[in-house]
Length: 144
Image (tube, rainbow, N blue to C red; front, side):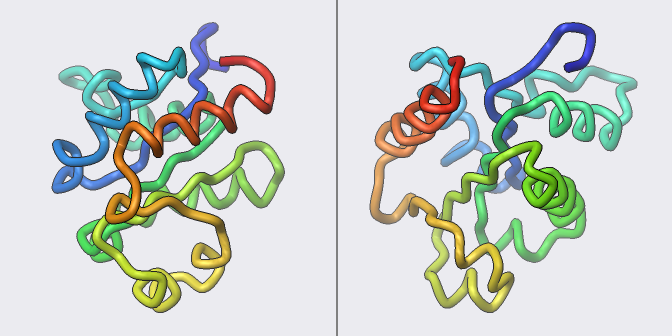
């Protein structure tokens, strides 16, 4: 908890997936009463990108990771994922993966341990259905 601010979910994504997945997911989750950390809503001029992201990860109960080809190929997103996985392994946060334009084989090649997690694919489910599933998980755990 940072200055009293906490979020239900932190959305980790690349800018290439912001319009298609991250923003619509944030909007759908917010309508369902889920508090969402999304970079563009939390970042201001002069902020430290790394510090704000670390704060968001620390103050969020769940880490939603939008895995895609651009996500896999970028260094910064792997830094975010490392932080989310560390909290997941420590039992401090749960990881909720979303596959965007990726197959199970793609995810297995990238990270066998992530491929083991039950995920939802944007190719099979609408953003609204994915948001409802996330909201259900958040609510099962207590507060939303």
